[in-house]
Image (tube, rainbow over all chains, first blue to last red):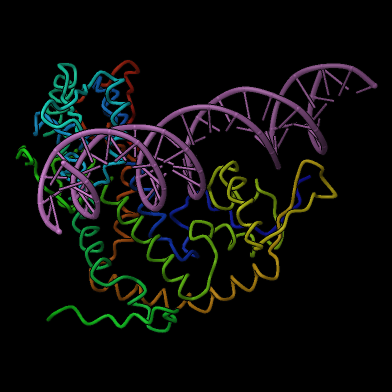
Length: 180
Length: 180
DNA sequence: TATACAATGTATTGCGCAATATATTGTATA
DNA sequence: TATACAATATATTGCGCAATACATTGTATA
């Protein structure tokens, strides 16, 4: 016998509003859903590229040849993250790594033929996927633009600035208003 | 001398649109930003609750006493995830764990006094934070509602269904149209 | 009663990311 | 030249989550 403890059965995490970071959890759910469904799409199309490494490979293709630090700068990511992703991409046969003859510190990455072929496959579906998103946005609104606006607003003025009544702890940050 | 390899310097990841999962990365950025800024807020207010465990503690408070599996069901999360979070919450002194006298399989969690005090502190700022989000949404649009709509649309009809020209691989999924 | 099954908790592994520290190499400066 | 500094790559650790496997205990059924 299961003792009937009062417990709201919210199978749907998006319905649960009694949580301070409801927006965080919701946007995370969106991110995960998109990654999963993109993975599905890639699998159906025979694309083995890790979804989270798409932008890395795109940047590498555009550069032709690049070091981890360069890729990191191009992507706005930390170079540690790039370096962490690369072994898997090499294992997948998508790119190779050579020492830079001109600078012993650097190791240059380059797409393999398979890597280029995979990127070409992705290109074949790129327009189609753009259309999918366009139709989706027409259906439910332009989430992309709105998230972008929200992100910029939060970056400009973080939650803590917006919450007047919350104590400022030690640092007594007397932030000047953004230059008008 | 740095060799000038052609490389788009996009310090801002949100500007990078030449990526198939741009929306995924963007919503992930929003999620991370919100978590970070909520952490800031909590720190300023002296709240030690892990941001990602807010909903767990809220559910536990409402239940009074609950097992990991119950909490998982209430949160719509896997019970492994709940069980993984609990040791940290116990270490923070926010809750305790007792074996259920009535069922040797179960272990019941309960908020400690400190846990209740911390939740009360969170309550004190809850309205304020709600207002912050209300004002934010008035400024940039109701992201929450729009993400919710998008999420439901994607759940109803995943990307792969929406991308007509992409091969269906083996399973030849002949999904019937959603009952009209 | 004996057996199968369900529910619960636990451990392990792996992925993705952040943060930190360290070694190596190149560059600039004293 | 010698020294300090910057850039690069690497390793390590930790967090959060997913997935799997497993042991234990309770429940239902033969």
